[in-house]
Image 1 (tube, rainbow, N blue to C red):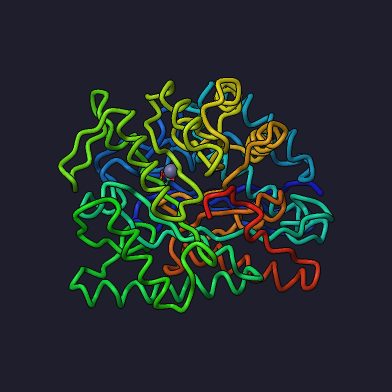
Image 2 (cartoon, protein in one colour):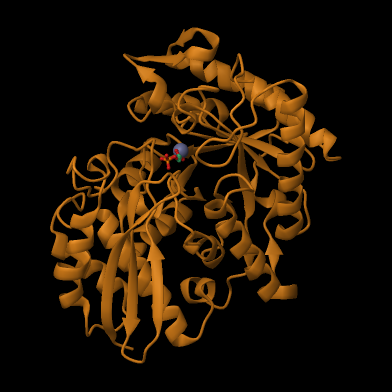
Length: 427
Ligand code: PGA
Ligand code: ZN
């Protein structure tokens, strides 16, 4: 059960930027590898992603320091530890770093180790990763929230101001069917865009980037695509938005370039309310900026009964911020991104606390990804019911969805698809 070696190296992520992967080997020869993702629309309080800032290499984006920290500082201390003691290892990593935001060793270095250890442990005990994480009861397959139109920073501000337009095919009877519907809608959307002479090139998460003239136009285009795929908008498929609005919040105003509008917070909330009235939107993530805390309360009051109000940049998977959010009643769900906090154990603490307070947890990839599919096992392990990991296209995105197919196959008749159970009442 003892760890015999840990080795990190610098690789490239899906955007072509450096990130790291970590190999963990046990004394009995068992071997596991974990890749670390990287975001573009980053919350200001996320744990520190350590980069070299050496302009001679990768324009400063190298992660050789983080690699060094794993190989030369962390590894010598972790070697010999029991791989099954995940929490002890995570706590040790946190204390070895010694800072509030993991800026000493780097949250990227620490997460790579934390996840590689977890994967090696699951192989060691002979359990599928989702069972190792969640136990014998783990059988809930999530609804895939597929991001099929990209905007904002993920599209170099070439398309809509809103960053993500997601479809949630919750009317399917299984994950497999839901994935198939998502893929059909994606291809059907491509045809709709071609017909209307829109660009069909894609953004960072594999979604299309049409040059729309408003932020609701993608919802109309997607509605046509759903119908053309022979499915029903609202009954079979719901919509979700991640405007990632911190990115277009300047001096107290939300700047919607595509519509030449500058909205104050209440007008922005009114705009979402109208969208929720007109479309089957079941989830709104980062509708308001992370610097607009008080107005989140109003947003949640106005829309929180009907739809999931998810905080990403505002909570950054950080337990103390989530606790404050629950006290202030500013949302009803938290986005879960392992690299925002940096260890598996701390992420699980956020999930447990949120659930104890009847909040839901929406598991997420990052816009810069590797082919690591850890989050697929994580979402089933903890039974969180929904996941977003981009379009049903591009290797690093489908790596996660494909792993969910395998898990569903493995579970056979014991698999339960979350379906409509995860949505409130806007459909
Ligand atoms: P990011 O975007 O990975 O670029 O931060 C994802 C999100 O905002 O949810
Ligand atoms: Zn987000």
